[in-house]
Image (cartoon, rainbow, N blue to C red; front, side, top):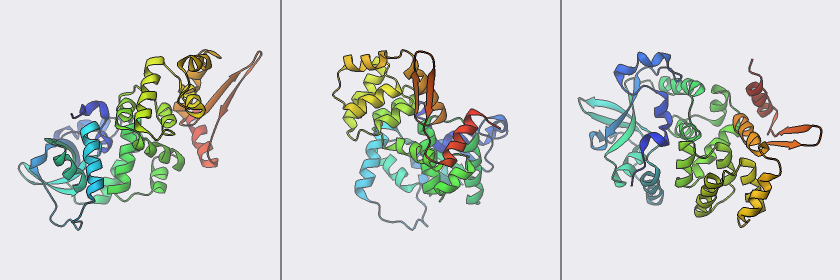
Amino acid sequence: MNAPRRGLGRGLGALIPTAPEDASAAEGTPAGRVEGSYFAELPIDHIVANHRQPREQFDEEALAELVDSIKEVGLLQPVVVRRVGDDSYELIMGERRWRASQRAGRETVPAIVRETGDEAMLRDALLENLHRAQLNPLEEANAYQQLLEDFGCTHEELARRIARSRPQISNTLRLLKLSPAVQRRVAAGVLSAGHARALLAIEDADLQDRLALRVVAEGISVRGLEEIVSLGTKESPARAARTRAVAPGLDELAGRLGDRLDTRVKIALGKSKGRVTIEFASLSDLRRIVDVIDPA
């Protein structure tokens, strides 16, 4: 069963207008305007493969995994096409995603329709828009992944162009390793990015799902989840509740601050004063955190 499209985000598709006539209106949107391109959900049978595609063989095991993912959460990375007729399009990038979508039984596929031949201009515009757009964590992760794969971006270029640290980009990309069910909850905002990063320490997908359900049902904070994961997933709900009850409200505040700064934050409260500990990976990561706290 295909998951609802909007709740999962559109990756790069969230950065550009949804139709040619919307382009002028999109100039005032947070994402800005991408010249010569627009986003659309296209009938899959209206798209043909690029006859100049040098790749003829696709790894069947990897393709089967992608088919399963598309059936579970949908296709989050749009293909890139160009119009070749009134109602027909030719693939430019994303043939593996297009083939997997066909096998998954999808009738439509998300696509960036490119009206310019300048690939570098599209890549640069998407990078600029990614700097300004307000994406959910899964949209952001998929946008990073597609820019890296389809447009030949490097981690260094992404970090420089969108004013993020390399560790932050790497941590965001790791969200794509979560189980499909957990990805859906992150995209829908039910789980925070902090919860998602804590769950990445669990390799078993079923166990990830069960812990995610506990987070939602019991209101476990990011720090509480980190402690459950570090102490072992067989910890009883009563013990988890006692852990959260040590300092009511502090775990939630630490989780919110950690999500805002995209790092781990600890808050300790003593009898007469408290302490906030903010972790950082490098000097550049510290500068990023300071910029978030005190923007110039």
